Length: 611
Image (tube, rainbow, N blue to C red):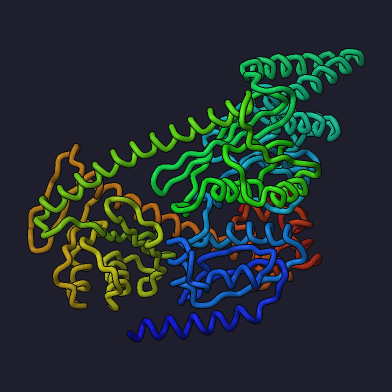
């Protein structure tokens, strides 16, 4: 009854807030009781759009669930609907609201970066897109596909791979003809940049332009009797032709992205075919979540907004299997991104329709294979959990397993990790890491294990695990048990997994349990233990790198504690700070030109420092 009253009061408050909203374009953000953003939307008329959520009729089940969780909302007025669209895309990417359709793990998609902000541009992989004057190509759904592209570029073009240009002598890469040694002045910037422009054409899928460019440069070099350069360009031209002749001609001239959509339960997959100059030059697939009850057009529209927000290239045509809502607005926004007109088409017949259908068939296959892999993995997990229950004589299968590991070097920067597996799978949202306080400077794994288990179980925060795994043998297990039983958790099984022989130690049993190597249970325990170790080591390395970075910057005049911390957060490693230009250093929070010059001078004035 009280819950109904609370809901009624909240609904009345929200309705009153809606009455005060402007009738202007903008973005609205819905928040739950914890203040977390659970939905982001845009509107031509904020007042009318937000009001529609609280009319309590004709809402879909998903929208009803959203409205039931709304505690408050806020709005941002924009100058136009296109501005609202851009802001909506950015906010969804930043916050990943629960009730929005979103690219799964889109923040981790890699790009290929071309550093046009450098005199001799580099080409390398990155996962962070910045406004730094560089050009980015991607995103790539598969890191493997991106690395294959980089390997191909390395084979076709002698690009520099070194981060620093401080060397004055050519390295091995030059002598095996994989680099032109710009660091040693063996090629002038203009010629090198011309090669990088060809690389960019290749990354854009413009193989005909690449061939034309290489052929022109080869002929010019031959006329100027630069025969070594002409021979190198000839070899590049031959290699490019060998690669591009495998690309099938699928349409007439023009650039297109062809989208295919498939759905299976709560999962959706968009397959993209990249057509450049009428040839199929590549494909990629992207998984989306949060679109269970949404129509196909809405899912495709969400993909278009999120993918092309950062895509390095926008084609003149995007083919879709279903008409998209607000197609005029999306076309106008894409046109702004491209700097020219962009058409969103839903072909009904002909070659273009066949391409869309083929992309859809590929998307279906992606989901089918994924479903089969997940089913097989689920079967393995269930078998492993059942075996664990039987071997450890537990009352029920351990659906939630928590594992602890300690990491340090001679007692310095001692940290602990807790990883959680739910249903036999990593549950990364539940992971925790601890900077330990009681053993700094004096290594004591037993005391460390007691501290971390006390901090986890002292308040007995829900949900509690069905099984606790300690990385270590009898000593670590005894230390953890003293704490866990001491805080009143008498029923949860606790085991230790010793690294050397994978022996399992149990409470009040002197002999270890030894499982066969092929056992699914021991494989699962090893996976959990190794994941805890990886997570702890990663945190330890981060703290150690931070300490080393701060100690090095202690020697730079004008760089105090706040600026050291700012540089650490902005760059993350000593190498990145050392390689940064003065302009890049100035961009770090709290830095000014004199401070940036001092840092740059510290690393470069007397040659490269050995750190």
